[in-house]
Length: 220
Image (cartoon, rainbow, N blue to C red; front, top):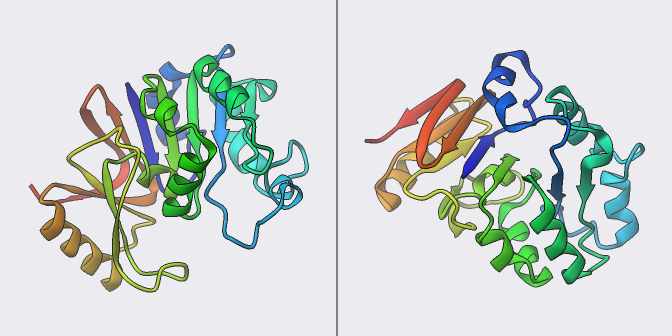
């Protein structure tokens, strides 16, 4: 299995493209699961306004880096949480080469994945899984959240569990709040925390961890 964890959708950048290229080509089918939205996105139309092909606010953020890796735009599929079709989603997961989790609210994303009825299928998935920010965090067995504008207090949550015995601090800039969060996570979890800056990426392949770009490792 391959897991790609980052803070931002940097995948088409020259500093990491060579490392990621072996996992993508013109036949790669990507399923995007944008379930990390805030609660004020409460209708299908509002979610489409964020991720609809061509006009969604975040559509190009996802598709452009994938295109740089050779993925065809027509082979990128987005699930709409409010247009629930669990059987169709299960088929899409089975047919995909890559599962892509977007940034946003990680705990809400895990909750919605379970509600949608696809948690078991995703947990059993053995292909390439990628995601930035919240989409990186939920790939872990457990992760911490450092206080920010969405989360007023430090908290620890369960992820999907692809990657075990490690944690991440996303959007790392060395702030005091992040350092406190990392220190608490080290005490709680007892394993390494990978602090990923905007120009960094962590690649986990069959349990082997590789840091690409700007990543700081804490703990032992």
